[in-house]
Length: 112
Length: 112
Image (cartoon, rainbow over all chains, first blue to last red; front, side):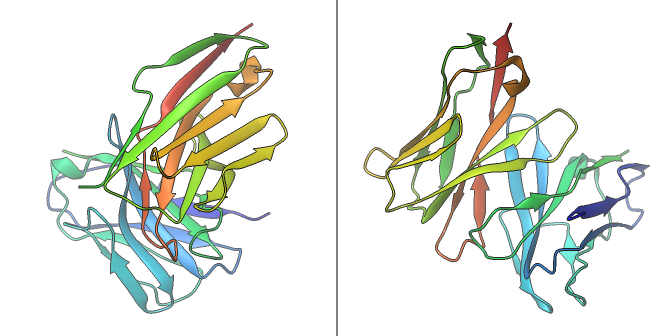
């Protein structure tokens, strides 16, 4: 089954404790991206990757890091989480930049 | 700055009627426009894509129009059903499609 898998789905952590949200896709897609979704603000792009070792900033990259060492994986790293990073995070992939985005089920992160 | 606006309030309609959702944008010239459906607690699911040189696209009970002069897209669901109740997101993509901007979404309720 074609899918994008994110882990963890739910996480409560404390300020400053580094965490990684993993994302993996099994569709051999070139393009992957991360979004955060906040009430009233919609989905905002954090980072995107056009291929292995090629990443670029989206609209809200501050406080986040990403890496793309393998085609299927695109982890999101929060080196020192802060409460304003409490949000619902989605990973997505697609074959072409403008094509259908396939989203994961989301990771709800709470930073205390 | 770039801005997308969707119907800010929820839309309530009766089963069997046509639902019309609006997406307006400013300070942007998208090459593509997409519509997604999102159910509570789930990731968005792709519905339709329309290119800047296309005026209208249809898929089963769905129809999307794209007016680059008005900077507006309309999304229609004909013969609506309670199962169509969800949040619908509009997304704009630049040439290449790597940077995607989403609207905050419109919540649709279809009453039986």
